[in-house]
Length: 388
Image (tube, rainbow, N blue to C red; front, top):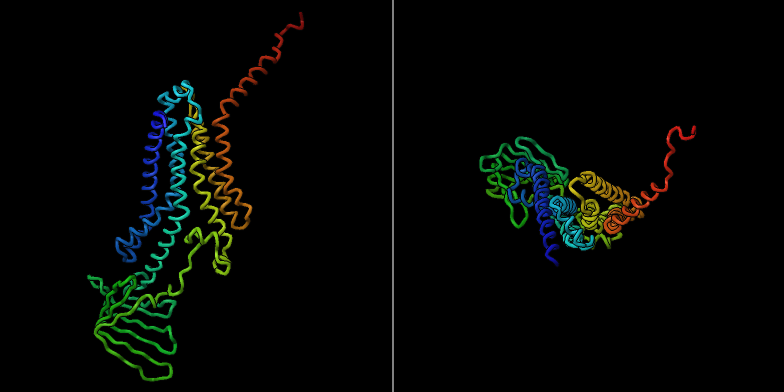
């Protein structure tokens, strides 16, 4: 790599890192604000709160990285042209392909990062996030039951507690278990405390009793206790097997899904859309970079405005991404729409490369043809020449 290429690569990389960090921080803060209810409303710890927000970062990287590459390329090229460095490089005989090389190095590095995110890291993060959310919802005492109210769950549990002490203990507990109609159990305790052991939530009751009533018996069996532990996971509505959506499944599972999987049988199109979206997402890193380079890669004087070129590049990037989103939605119903998923970034890249390598020659040829035609056009006869 030459000195000029290292200089360009350093400039565009610094711009990319700054833009990427700024965009990620802004969007991540919005995700944090959306998840504040975990701490304020559902009583979760700060560690769970940070885990949930951090697990959303891989999905943000996939969206932000191509945009950051686009902005960094525009910034670096505009800076080089503003300092007249592009003009000097062009005058020194540096070809567009050589000037494009350091930008492509950044694009390929970003391509690899986004590919790793979409094919492995992102589905794993979504999978872990689903498990964490399921575990949080399983603790119905912290998330569902309200102080002073009788709450009936779908699983057949009715739970009530009078108030919560300053230390977090529940006072005046009543719980009725009707999951088995043949045997109804009622738990009454003066106080209780939720604890977690090996990822399982338990409600430890103190100074209470258990009343069990058989269906065909008029007498209830009453057992008093000083301490009694209930596993809350068996009472939660999430007792059934967790169902993972297509985006929460590994790439290998999408490539070879189980034909008997009820989710696949019902949402086969979404499996197909998710798989194509994962493979096509890294292509936008290259596409956006080439669009930016095609718009600003040609040297211009300070009198030639570059605002129009930047606007055209922004519009082109928006159109390419919209076409990609539209094709991803359409492929759920029509498999042939996958051509649009890959065609949007690939066709835009091909057009951009043509403009980069052949654009100046085409413009020179067009200008030469226009000049030749203007010379051959007969001059208009002066007024009054016919009367002579």
